[in-house]
Image (cartoon, rainbow, N blue to C red; front, side, top):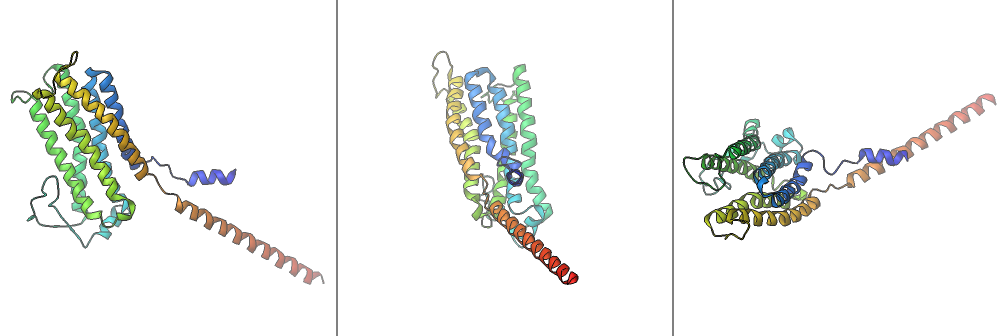
Length: 289
């Protein structure tokens, strides 16, 4: 029983730290989609909740890339002789003439800042949108210059592209070194979550606003578009959750090896103690003789 308790203490949890956010974000998006489908008037609040988790998800994914390399110091030591390629998507994929930057603590801080500003500003802007929406100032799908909707959407687009650009730069850097840790499938799942929760939602909402998605009583066109998007998100995030579970599930081979080493050391200590006892017993016999 004691051995089992020690084994449980040595076993790390599957969903701790950064992996908790990375594996639970798709579940949170699916749950918010369910709530938005059941309660149509709560769409702004469910979008706010999903946006917060998505922003933290992108920032934690970049941190995971650094931690998989052994942490900040090991990351800088590993890539100190390489150059950062800035000509990557989604911002500067066509700008091949961009200079390559040295990898140091300053450039690593700038890359982290690229995702941190998204994790901080997006929830703030979404909260501002909810407040303006309750006041009647923020109108979903509005493109009027006089309203606040267009300006908030432009700022959201800029900070989103900046964050995705920072993650793309770091991924291209660490991809050859982390190929044995399923980093390419993890990055693909990360892109699926971002594209399905952002680009798909924007396209369907635009189609609903333009009247491409017709109204079906009792739902008008925009509400029916939101309803269709939430149905799609529930199914898509369910499949993405299964993929995250397979990719981020930790292996316990090292724990088995550690257990074997501990057993070997315990057996060695037992043999040494028995040999010492026999030696003392033999010396006592000689002394009495």
